[in-house]
Image (tube, rainbow, N blue to C red; front, side, top):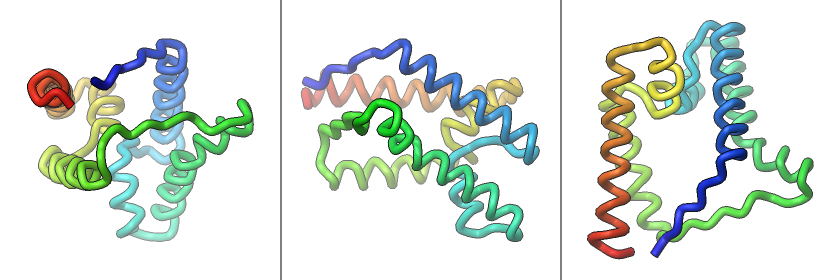
Length: 144
């Protein structure tokens, strides 16, 4: 059985950093911070200025573990209790959801809800209910 470890201080700090990044992106570039939108726009940019802020945001997201290692002296421990096949299937399902939902959890859940967007509130509610149902089925019905 997988045990979820709740880390309130790390979660609060991480959430504050995500919120700060979202505010700074809106203040400096005038764009909503949604990871899926940033990545898709990076692959098909409108112009160099559009590509450059997206590339900087992606580098910032990827470099987080390296920054943590510089501060603490070790990389964060990551345990993935599923096979690579399951990760790929999950990624495809999430990608389909991002496409149909017109955004991801960071865009809808952080930025859209902060703007009181009805579409983002509906999308985030759907994300959370689906996540809860999936965890319940995997842990309590399938027992993996």
